[in-house]
Image 1 (cartoon, rainbow, N blue to C red):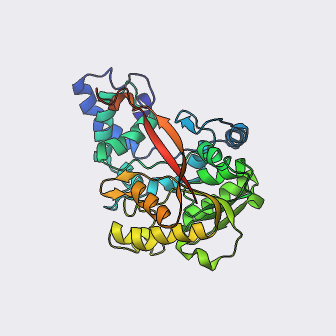
Image 2: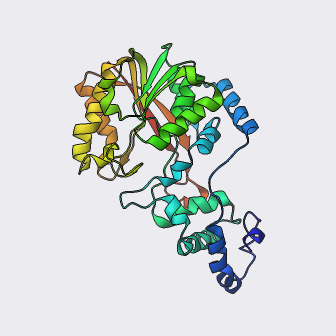
Image 3: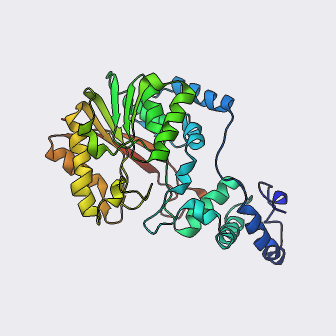
Length: 330
């Protein structure tokens, strides 16, 4: 039955409320079997890489409509959907529950004209209060890395490959730490697919253990660290969020150590993509730690996006949201 409605314009809105409620349980059950992972052909992925190689920008500002390179991240990191929140709930777990997908389908019918898979996936985050996880845009990483003629970039928290792609596309050698074995393997697979292994050094360990590894000084540190227990990437003790009982301890014992170790390897710019979320004031905390170590803010790189049409209010309709990468220099 689902094939009559999924991705078909106005397919659920054209139904009466009674008709929709009658078929809703079956639609939700069938939707649990739909593959929500993003897959692209080799041809599309290579074209995506070439777009990133050709990308250029003369300012420190870009928009979220620029996506060159992101398809590579989406394709090679299906474990992105396994990120858990502080309650241990993940997108992948929610997608397997028909009662959750019933709520998503209801929300989609009310908010959108068509039940596209992409919108239904967004509905998981919107209806379940799940934090909307993001991937760092490769083109933004390239913009940041282009600020310097340095040959080497350090990323203490690799994540989903965006900064690796941007650094290599900028002509740099990328050194990255990631303690999650699945993410580490996916990073290797991505590098092998693009044949950029000679431009990449990947270390399957937490960056708090950086002193155990020998590599030269770098000209840029660029990263987006975890947000304590807001995003749980793995349940093992190697994950920083599992090593500490509170954000304050995590900040003082892990985040500060990683920043300190990174700056010890740096002769150049330290660039951090962080946000303030609830009581976790990471923008201020990262800034304060840098200032303690003799670094001051040098520049900002912004990824701007307008609020989604369905989420706009009178107060926010004309505002733009900026995802900032803040760079420090001593």
